[in-house]
Length: 137
Ligand code: TYD
Image (cartoon, rainbow, N blue to C red; front, side, top):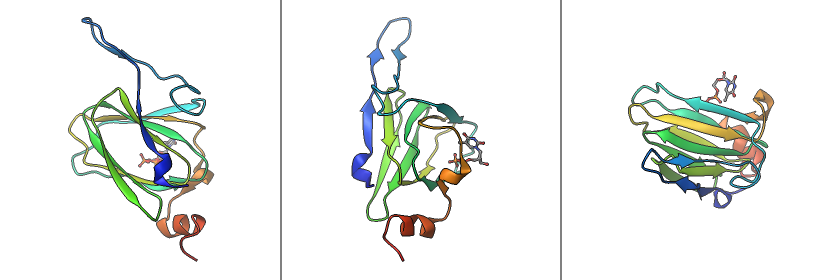
């Protein structure tokens, strides 16, 4: 898979003087049924998260509050995406190495995922990931 398959999703935004509302529907705004939600918060300044790839997992990454960067990498090409709006999500397809950094204070990163947590689905080692992508022998 390549980072060309990752893209920003412009989520519906119902603006309202009482406060805005955004929603995400599985199979509609993301090309998968949502089976898990997790979030990162209380991230100390200078911290890096991620640093792995997934074999089959698909995700939508949203900056619910504050901002951070997601670096997506397919072993051939890399792209840094700055997320700072709760109505934009970054769709990350399977087989993409990702790193998250540049967290603002108070940032909350919510991730909608296509499957339950499974350590077997991770590439934790970049060289293992590159081999699986057919880039390194
Ligand atoms: P990890 O996916 O490496 O975090 P990140 O990508 O944000 O840097 O997960 C960190 C730890 O949390 C690891 O021990 C596995 C555990 N974990 C779960 O138990 N369930 C989950 O849904 C997730 C995402 C992580």
